Structure formats: structure tokens, C-alpha cells
Image (tube, rainbow, N blue to C red; front, side, top):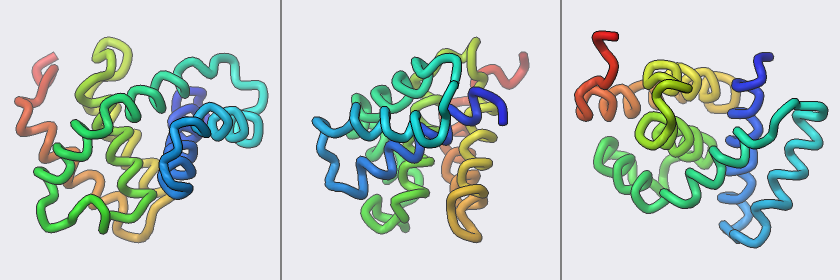
Length: 145
């Protein structure tokens, strides 16, 4: 598994655990450290994981507002915890990530792959639909590159 994909997987699992266990910010570093040790021992750089997780947490209200607007028939609390955190992670990379490092379509594709691996039967399609809608609404950055 490529380092970036593994890092996103660990970030998603950490966000899932944080969300599931009551969103205690004080436990976030402990959750990340445990998940890195368990799922990515020997990973060269854990900075990408930390940047993703902290970026999602720091922008959580904005991300949830955008998800709610883009999927109005699915209140954020009714989206499964896995799908909700995959959407947050993908949306964070899409909107706030370094586009030279992670192009928008890569961010979306990575989120879809996480949804297929960790979510339910229709998670991939759901994540694709929501992130695709947002991508089109922001004007498809880098479409012609």
C-alpha cells in the first residue's frame, strides 16, 4: 500500500475513533499515536497523517456545513460515522490541501477508495456523489491542467 494511501487510511481511522468516542480533543494525539503504531508501524513520515487529522478538526464546522449543504437529504448526524469522516477528510484535502501535492481529483479518488474499503455497500457512490458535487460547484479547479 502506498504511503499516502496508508496515511489517509490511518487518518480516517483516527477521525472515526475520535468521532465515535465523543470528540474529546484531548485524546486525539493518543488516538493517532495508537493507530499509527498499530496500522502503520515503520511508516517513514507521520506528519501527513497529523496534518490531515488536525486540518479536519480545525476546519470541522466549515466542512460539516459544506457537507450538509451538498447532501441536504442526509443530515450530518445521520451519515454513518465512517462515511462522515471520509467525506470530511476528502473535503479537507479538496478545499484546503496543497493542490500541487494532491490534485483535487486525487483527493476525491482517494476518498472513494477509503469508502469502498471501510464503508458500506453504497459508500463509494455516496462519497463520489457528494465530493463530485462540491468539486463541480467550486469550478473544477485544475480541470484544464
